[in-house]
Length: 259
Ligand SMILES: Nc1ncnc2c1ncn2[C@@H]1O[C@H](COP(=O)(O)OP(=O)(O)O)[C@@H](O)[C@H]1O
Ligand SMILES: [Mg+2]
Image (cartoon, rainbow, N blue to C red):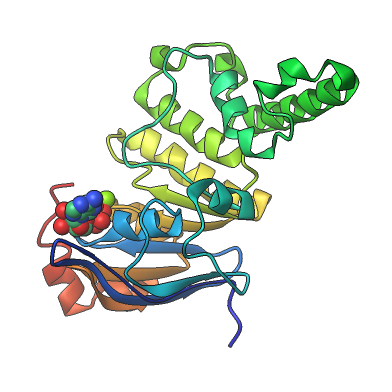
């Protein structure tokens, strides 16, 4: 069996607590693969290990056949894995377009600061900047953020800020996008919008998506596969139909819908 992105026997402990305990799953290219479970299940911790923020105590994370465990977060972004955070992490006092440009920094050869010292290669620097700008403008168009391009992020509604955060992750031109509770705190209309964006990102941009989400309507409607966990361990993995009637899912997950 050949897969695109595999997590194999992944475990991490925090002071004796097995936050993630021997978790394995396989994600095929261009899939929406969702991870659900009550608060404290270990979902975000899995994302933190995938994105290189935490190093697992054991296990492998294989992307296109390569084990990425031990790579620094910037390297993991460079191989094509981008993420958003459970709590928005943007520069509020910068414009939307600037936040997206910062999302492209891993692709900048010259770097924002070193560019100032590159007077010998001015035209190359200018060309590179134009390329980055063009790609960022494409994402602004794609997410229909033109109207807000020059607005400060802090002046935007919560739903729009979440969209900008999505844009910043897309600015990396990722192959895999990790979304941690993208609809948290949103109203019904914003939730519907974000669900459509996620589907568009899968279908139009061809990105593979790992989704942590508490909104069951969204999860059941959008996911190709759903992985259910509780207290660090796997409960079941399957399609929406396979998962939603599982007694342990009802007990473990629907028993706690606080968040
Ligand atoms: N840096 C950390 N230090 C100590 N414990 C942590 C740390 N990160 C996560 N945990 C613990 O790991 C468990 C899983 O947390 P988390 O992955 O955030 O859960 P979820 O995202 O499913 O709500 C929780 O018990 C949490 O307190
Ligand atoms: Mg979490």
